[in-house]
Length: 214
Ligand code: AMP
Image (tube, rainbow, N blue to C red; front, side, top):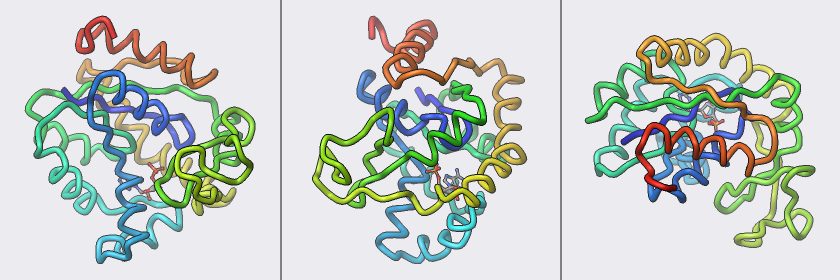
């Protein structure tokens, strides 16, 4: 089974995907995180992706689809976060997946998204995510998990964050309509604490009947 988490940058896809994956023994696949690993390691793919990511645009479909296809080939259940981001990616995913993926939209208002993006801090070693107000690290500026330095994600600066939201409206909002049209979309309220959203998400997943008693 493949679950797709949809929603604008800052909707909490990464946080919720990690929680859902843990609860349901699923693999969490974040294309943004995979791409940032390529950037850090300066691979050819990373060098190809860099300018798109730094400007707040999308990495070309064929690059991302190839990356996802390779990861999905080892067959378990998955939670996808940050993919698909275009209708072409959603169509490709339907073709790759053995069973039709199910999408959950995390609905979050624009003001809240901006607040989340500007307060977000990530660890330099592994991308663990914090928020200055709602999820501060125990020690200022340090990751609770691995002690590495926290930093502002480069594309969370205000101009780039705004560009990412425009790209979301233009390219990714139609993906929601795609799943809705296919009868494979549930929308949940993505505002509130991570635990509240986690519980709403768990109810949906239970209703769809995959994680029994989870
Ligand atoms: P994220 O961590 O999901 O916010 O992704 C960060 C950046 O990586 C995005 O702004 C895009 O530049 C790129 N990216 C991540 N996932 C995709 C995707 N599915 N398609 C195209 N670009 C992506």
